Image (cartoon, rainbow, N blue to C red; front, side, top):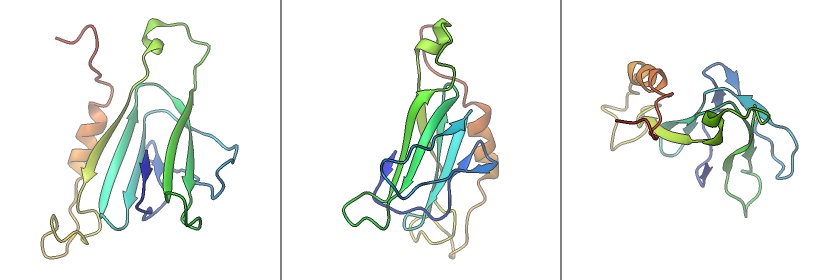
Length: 139
């Protein structure tokens, strides 16, 4: 995920841990994500979810101080279970979903009276069905 818009706050890994975004392009730190990463952009007032089909290591960059770079980069670097030979592991999928387009109440196109929308139920629905991926067995 790459964005020209800077983050409102640090991304959340699996709904509980803050993802550490480094200011350096070549930083070596990776963090384990078992299911999802959630992040909110300040200017668009939008909160997004990235779901991964398998546990994965990610790197996060916050490059707002670098005038030539995009402010936010989230990069999946490798599968957590790279030794697994299971056929299901041979397909890796990441999906991005818009969770809320009025997180802070600042989006004039989607917010009513400047008030944020509570999308907790929608977020729970997205997480509940995050493990459903199309494939050979899809009917």
